[in-house]
Length: 361
Image 1 (cartoon, one colour):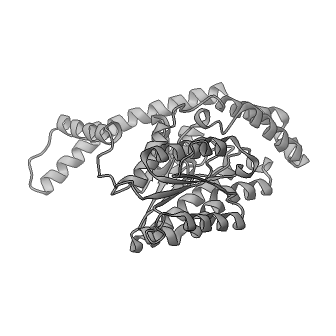
Image 2 (cartoon, rainbow, N blue to C red):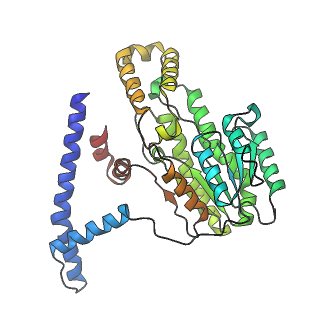
Image 3 (spheres, rainbow, N blue to C red):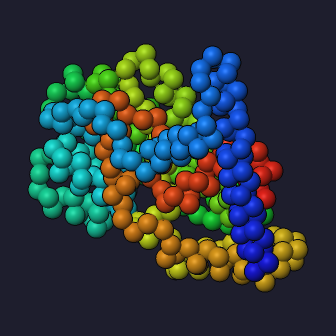
C-alpha cells in the first residue's frame, strides 16, 4: 500500500510539472498564433500566463456571481428524506427563509426524531408528510396531500428537492444483486417516482426540480459501484428532464456534494462493521477463496478510515440548494466539495481515462 501511495504522489507531481510546462510554453505560443491569424498584436508569455491564471482564480476562488433572487412569499417546496442529514437541515433552512415546506419523512409514522423536530416548530408553514419514496402508494398520498394543502393550488408547487437516498459500499464480486436493486430503488427510482408524482404541480408554477446526486454521479471509485450506478442514473434522468421541461419554463438543477460523511453521519464504524460482515458472509465461496480475508480486511479498514473524513459544515450544500430554488437563473450543476475532490472530478471527467487511472488507481 505504501509503494502505491508513493507512486500516486509521484504521478501527481509529474502531471503538475507537465501541466505547468504546457501552460508556460505551449499555451502562449498557441495564443500568439491565434493573435497573428486575427491580425492583432502578439501577447507576451508573461501576459498569457497572468490572464490564464487570473481566469482560473476568478472561476474557482471568487463568490458566486449574483443573478437575482426570487420572492419567497407564497412559494411552497417539497423535500424528501427529511429525517436526518441534508434533508432535515434544508427543511429548517428554507422554512426560516419563509417558504412553506412539505417535509417528507420515512419515519414519521414511527415518531422519528427528525419528523418530531420539524413538527415541534408548530408552524403553519412546516407540514410533515409520511413518505417512503419506494412506495407508490405513499408517494401518491403525499402528492395528493400537497395539492390539497397549497395556499393556491392554481399557482402550483414551486420546487421539489429529491434528497432521499442511501449509501453502501463493497467490491463488485462481494455485492449482491439485491443490494444493487435496493440502492437504486431509493436513490434513482425514488427520485423518478416522486418527480413524476408532483411534476404537474411544478409545471403549473413554472418552478424547480432539484435533484441531489453526488460527485460519484460524475466519476466512479473502488467499493462504490452500487452507489455510483444509482447516482449516475440521477444525473442522466435530470439531464433528460431538463431538456423536456425547458418548454414549460421549469428549471432542473443537480447538486453534486463531495465528502460530507462527518456532517451527515451517513457512514459510521458500526455501519462499516455490519456491512462488512454481511458482505463476507454472503459472498460466494469461490470469491472468498480468490480474494482472501487479508485483501477484504484491507478494504474494510479503508472504509473505516473514511468515517471521520470530509466536511463538517453542511452550509455549502444548503447554499447551493437554496440558490437552485431562489435564483432567477439557477445553474445546471452545483458541486459543493473540497478543492481536491473538485480537481479530481475535473481530471476524471475531462482527461483521457488512461491518465486519470494512472493518477488515482
